[in-house]
Length: 152
Image (cartoon, helix red, strand yellow):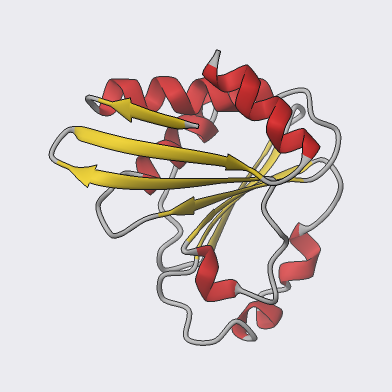
């Protein structure tokens, strides 16, 4: 599924639709955010997380993981841009994040290959200026349902 957004507001709207469609999931759900620096991966993740009532959403570029938990949801936003080796993820207890009912937003997933969970959805972002292209691919049945929900 390919989409084009023309500004940050449209990116946030897409993020909110995705979040809404993930809000009733009971199993672990993984979204890969793929793209070069500055294409909007973090903005998409922030809009997604803010949908669940978290006002202050930090980029996990230096911490690798920022977790957001309340009575409704458990979200782990991961950014592996600064990761040197996937095995480093074992030191932060990556397996502890893979609990049922948790949502994962993973930026730069290719740098954690072999250690992180497989994606239910991968979103490849590209473009410049205000215009962004989103290519959403579903890899599981749950991913297909969420994609259909978010794009109709």
